[in-house]
Length: 288
Image 1 (cartoon, helix red, strand yellow):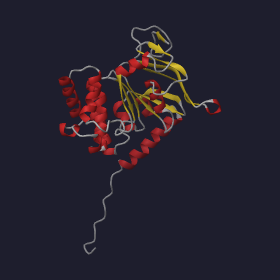
Image 2: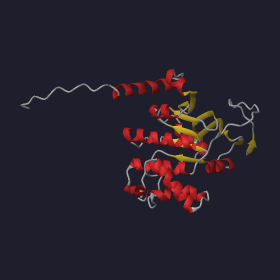
Image 3: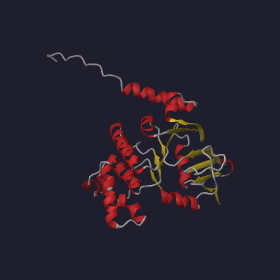
């Protein structure tokens, strides 16, 4: 069922000039049946304005990826609704999700499994452009241009996934999403498969490219360095519930939820370890 609604940023139904890009209203996801049925996402409500970059954080298994998959229609929701640009859907996999999938691109955790092993990276990056009806010369140009922005040369994108590194595969997955110039971009731990140095480099390239494309973004991440670098808002999910929603600066200054406090404390401990000055090693004895 689809209805047209005017929604306020608070999501309470007041008529406004422009509806939010994406709105979740009491979204719940349940799995199993009978006595084994359990709710893994409970009454999630969230408003995302056009052009906003929202980061979803929280402990492992807390429901972050479940939230993302429910929005994309990859998981059926048992209650609540999703509104995209003012059109609300109370059932998954209907016209709203088909529209979302035309307007949106997603990058998931495992870059290698997201790429067709029998196709070159160039073909993979061009694929959404071909689906959108972009003429071959234009899609080749845009694919090569986006790949170059993500640090991939023409020689690299002519290889298949098995012939490139994990970092290059993830850059290709991100380039594939950005080449289509999506209105919405969903990122599910897009840098988790990369080591710290490569992840930082790819994050910088991603942030720079996103500034040019300017999509609305919902990103799941456990890394507050990436959140700090890219997001404007932080949503904390714990045990299948949204327990905090705040601007990045306010969250980093003083989280309101216990899960948020734990995440920030863990990040501060990690930064203290990795940013600690290295002590000079004692000089080796000449005779040793």
